[in-house]
Length: 359
Image (cartoon, rainbow, N blue to C red; front, side, top):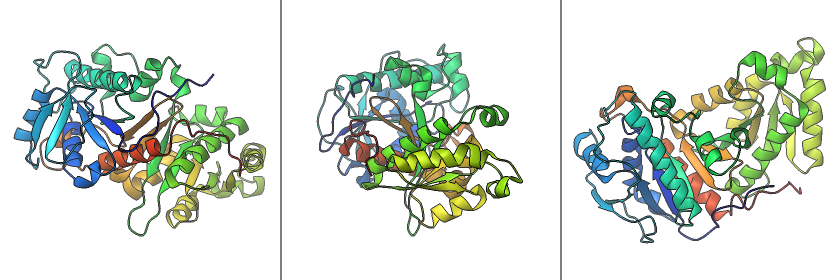
């Protein structure tokens, strides 16, 4: 049974932003994105963090804009603006020392508690979406959180198994380049395991998830391509038969379910074609097949969108950047795109708008 979504679509939705690990660039990209007027158009933003930690970031890290910090309750409904950070304080001590630029249990604990507070606000109807900054998995484990990352932490909070949640990479349009969405049939596992586990149902499921989410983002029936597994699409069986035995049957099933789908297509040219506007989304068959081209096309603009949860959660697609903390090099593009993607999904009624394609 699908869990009931915690939120519903509303004008100017409240979006809860967490900074990830405070020892990294998460607080910087959150503050930089907040300082842009466009981030507040059609949304009311809040940052989940200790006000004292954010005050130190604004005051001491290079290239931070001047901003006032105002602590508020989670249920506060006021609009947000670029010059004043509206900060909701999570549980835990604000006096705990978090060393900057290094892995620590304190940093992992702060990141997890902010996510827990954001989830609580969403469950209570005080926020319509969660946008997360980058955390460090080793720091998370050092803090006693035995989860791989944000996705599983939120899945468990929703009462779901870890495997219930998956991800889509979304690269927003940029100038002449259209937006591209990618969902993977297999993801965080060895290549040997991924190829051995690949099946027509896995590919079909990935295609349905991609079609459903892209409809909410682009507002129309998306054009989807499914990548081939082998070089040159298998060359008629010379380089492998998975295209005919696994991929083609999944493509046929997707088409029968109303998805505008093409494939299998050779992966070495597929993303070029998508980047030129031929397709809105790609089903990748394993991790690097989807991640490498998206990160080459625009790593700092990409957004991670979680699927399978009864809430909207988007995230930056980059890491904690411990090596560039405070140097004025943090790029807020991915955070800005994650906020916009969350806003669009809420206004589209996600996840309630999730449906089986009807053509």
